[in-house]
Amino acid sequence: MTSFKYDVCIIGTGHVGLPLGLSFIEVGLTAIGIDRDVYLRETINSGKMPFYEPGYDTLISSLKFQVYDNFEIIKKAKNIIITVGTPLNNHIETDLRQIQQVLESLGNQLTVGQLICLRSTVAPKTTRFVRRWIKHHTSLKVGKDIRLAFCPERIVEGNAYKELRTLPQIIGTEDKKSQKMAKLLFKVLTPDLLFTNYITAELVKLSNNITRYVHFALANQLALVADDLGANIYEILELANYKYPRNHLDKPGLTGGTCLRKDFGMINENVPYSDMFLSAWKIHEYMPTFLVKHLLKRTKIRGKVITILGYTFKADTDDMRDSLAPKLYRYIMRELPTEVRISDHYLSDPIKDEHNGKLRNWSIEKSIVNVDCIFVAVNHTGYREALYPLAKQNPNTWIVDIWNVSNINQIFYQASALRALS
Image: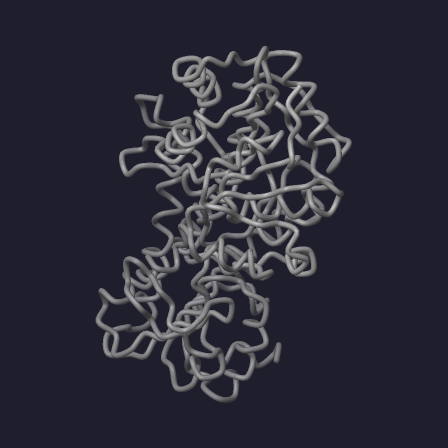
């Protein structure tokens, strides 16, 4: 049996791979990473977190987890975990290029006795594709020479440290040796392991994300209907949920991110007809338009000073990937305001947006001085306290608060309405 220097090698050390590698370090395993991103490598290898993820600052400062750009180090690792991106192409088609590139890079480095664990969110049958690729391009046989498993991550950004140890781990394999090796690897993080085959494991991960996506779409659809009819969605939710035992309606919001915004397509690409997943996608993508159009029913944007609070895809993170805030910015710009200010205290200045260019990142305090309208695009901590003083400072300012950060239970209101709360 081959003797390995490292227990684990993580290929792709982003929001999924890095917390996992550091968590393995904490429980006593030896772990390394591979990544082609120079910034990620240099930041991690200097002992700093390249993004916001609470709980890992001390672990990464120990310098026990190092990241390389050479795939030859694969030979020294017993377990290889692939966590590279799996985006959706514009034509509702799964983009497997990053996984294919990884396979081409590690193919000649694979060694008898290793486990390849696919952890990225993937379309159904992707793990079987990996198995076929190994059979076609190497002399190794899965289940005999090497092991193969699909073990999806199901963490939420910002809570990885806790959830890697508390969420049950799904393990998808199709031979006993692969199952045994994957079990030995992940039981050091959580004792709650659930075993199945490739397809089922892939669908479990997609089902978790798609269920949330459709659930949030229902909330947004009800918000659209309510405002069209002159009703208040937050009053509806409060009355509908109060002591009602059979369902719970969620709050509306801008729903994006690299999982929720794309994962429906990994199932939908094999479906020739429209369905509820596509409808949910359409509802979510319409929400920035809804906020602008329905504000225009109440006041003007042209020639006004507008502020957008929040630019990431979710609260209290620095991750901008697949955020709907940049889309909101573009729809506001179509109405020809005098100025649009963006403030997000989780991002640096300037904000670098590949579609909207470099944008000044205002402080919260300065961003809301003498403005005509404020869009709360993300429910970051701190926005509630920032809005309350407007009740006295600028009571005529319109606030578009789909997240209800002010607790005033309205989407569209003027700052004077905050007087009772401030």
